Every structure is written in C-alpha cells, then in structure tokens.
Image (tube, rainbow over all chains, first blue to last red; front, top):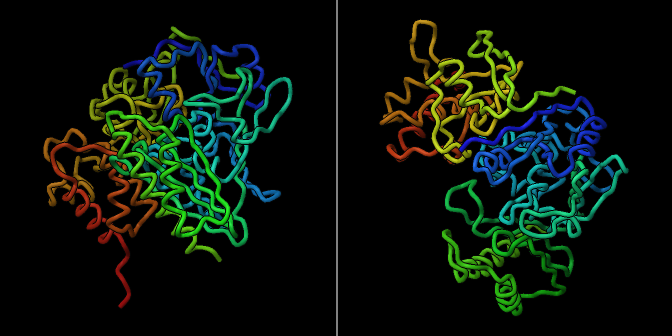
Length: 275
Length: 168
C-alpha cells in the first residue's frame, strides 16, 4: 500500500511542465490534486517514474468566463470551483453536481481538470462535461489543441490525451438562456462512486440526458419533442442500450432501474426549471 | 524546476502545529508516514491508505487533506496541523473536543483525530451549518462505533455556541 519510487518534479511554469512531459512522456504522470492518482499509486495500479506536480502552478489557478464558456485551469481545486460566486447562476448543472464530487475532505485538494483527466466512468465532472458538450484544452511542445469532450474521452479511464500533452484547462458551456438543468445520483454513501448518475438539460423541444456509472464512459442521448407518452419507452431503450453489468455494488437490472427512475426524475426537474 | 530524485533522502521543513520542524524524506513517502515515522506524531492515524476512510485527515494551510493521498514533499514549506493544534498548551481540550466528549461523539477514538480536524475546518468556513451539511461533511469519514449521531450533535452545538449571541 505504498507507491513505488519516483522522481518528483515541480515545474515553475507551464513551459517547464511541458518540457518535462516531452522528455519523460509515458513514464511521467501529472500530479494535480492526487485524489485518484495517489490512491492508484498506493495500490500499485499506476507506477510512474516521474511525477510532475502542477498543483501549485499559479498560471493554471483560475476560473474565467469568455465566449459563453467557463474555463477552469488545471490547478483549480474542486472546492475553489464550488466556491466560485457565479457557479449557481452561470452553471446550474455543475452547481447541482459539485456536492457529489468526492467529499468535503477530497475536494479541497482534488482538481476539476484532474477529474476530467482521470475519466472515471462514474465520476460526475466528466458526465457534466459530456452532457453540456464542453471541451478540453491541452498543450505540448508541439502547440495547443482543443478537443471536444466527445473526442476526448475514449473509454474507461482512457482519453485522447497524448503522452506529451498537459491538460491546461477544461471549458464548460455556460447556462443556455431558457434551458433547464438537473442532476441526481445514487451512491452507497454520499460522495462515493456513483452506481448511477444522471444529468439532464432541457431546452425548447430538445431533451439531453447524460448517464454515468453504467457504461464504460458517460453516455449522452438527445431526444427532440420527447413528451409524457414517450418518456418511459425512451428511458427504457436507453437503459438497455447502456449495457451495464453486475458488480459488487449493484446488478445490471438495478442499474437499468436507476436509469429509468432517476432519468425521469431529472428530466421532470429540468423542465420545472425552464425559465 | 525543483527536482527531487527517486530513492534519495531530501530534507524538508514545515510548520507543524505552529512549530517549525524538519525531517528527511524520499519523494515516495506519504505525508501520513512522514508525520508518524519521521516525526513520531502517532496522533496521525492511518486506516485504509487509499483515501476512503478519512482517519489520516490533517489540515494543510488550514484545509482538510487526506495525508495518505499527499506526499510529504508536497507539504514542504506549508503549514500542517494535526489534532494537537486543537487543545491548548496545557492539554485543555477545546470546545469542539469537549462537545464530542459530552455527546459521546467517539467510542474507540481511532477515527476521531481526522473527524475533529475536518469539523474544525468546516466550522471555520461554515459557521452556521445545517444538520444535512454536517452529515455531508462527515460522509468523508468512516466511524464503525458511534453511528455518527453524537458527532452531529457535538458539531451543531459547537457551531451554536461559537456564534455571536443572537440579537433578540
């Protein structure tokens, strides 16, 4: 339950971090909050030769709004994001989801970008990013690119990030005028990994529902003109399409039940929030 | 760029419960092990060692942190507080500790140091928490003795007593 030996690097700038990544590539891991990475290192599920600590990198500690997006820098903690005064008004879905992200004690160190980088299938932030249709900003010695979240997360704990790329920020679309949002999840204990998490966005005739914790990555489905008569069938189809499996926390049938039940709950709640 | 090589001992300093301390550590050493093994601070308890149980919680620059998910080198130059920071120099318990005692907020006491530190940090941020907020904060800890009811009562009572007297 102790990590393997590694060399610890603390770059003083984004440039230094990117240079270190270019040199060490697959042998390096980026350390931000460490709330998933260090646990996995303790289990020896991850063995890194080099850790590049960006948790204290001042240029990456920011939350800013521009062009209809909220951009969160890579060293911004989940607690800092939750305390952002405009969160409820500008990002109601994230405001509803953040209290479920880990615990009070892990959010103080865990970062928003770290959660996206880790891409756990039951994690709330990747689910919100997928439901809102956000993007991820990555920098390497070759330049900077922005990937839409649908191109970024490729599977369970896997992303399109290349070994020399540093995730510098994540961008969430801000609240759409006239749209309603809602979030719900079922976990064994508040803050634990979600057995099923759902995020809904309703705007005009469009209903979007993201589901986490069931398939190997967050899955988003969009319906046009979904009404009361069609909602149960639509959710039932989605529940079966996700192909959840039995594990020590829940059976596949229970998970399908949660998709149907929580899915309806958040769609109804999001409709009520329509302004 | 700071570089601390693997397998080598590096001298670090930190302010621990108000005192400047130093010790040597490899990069791989967890803060929990550093505090216990290098500095002999056995009041930092260790449970699951993967961030689930919360027993190893300390405060880093006033914020709660799982010391089993933090490397000692990350705490270099920072302020680290353990449960020792709560009582005064003569060992007199603070109000939160006394409330835990009064409300039977502990039984075997193993999880208590981490919970006290979380609660202390939480009350500094949220002076008037609801019971639901206290329970959500406590969800980051595991206690197998008490059932948490006494802790919730102790934390709520402390918050109430610390609040400036309400104006009629």
